[in-house]
Image (cartoon, rainbow, N blue to C red; front, side, top):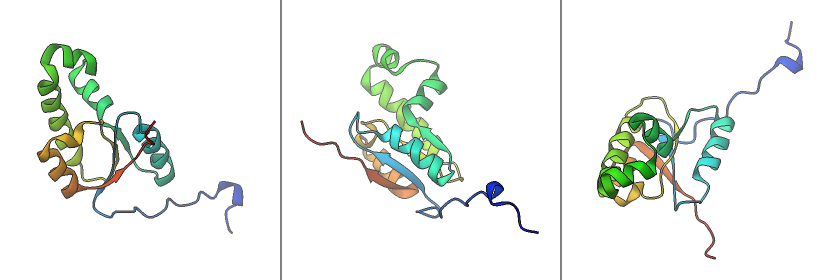
Length: 124
């Protein structure tokens, strides 16, 4: 006997980039985290906000990391956490911080393990 329609769950759409993460890049305030959470629900895939992960791993807010270690210290930590996230086998939706693509090593790693989607914002 078929299940009642009310209990049938539609399957998730196919993953758009098999074997790779879906990575949202763009300037600060472009909506990477908002879009990432929506895609996570739609695709039923884990979502990682890189800035939130950095704060969780370090136990410090991003402004505090900048205050204590400067931008260079923050970027080093950002690169380390990004590498850990990209090393996960399960495809994820990742929202990077606005400056994550500034480092050439980060760009290379993102290109290797993820499909990057650039979110633009209108010039005001």
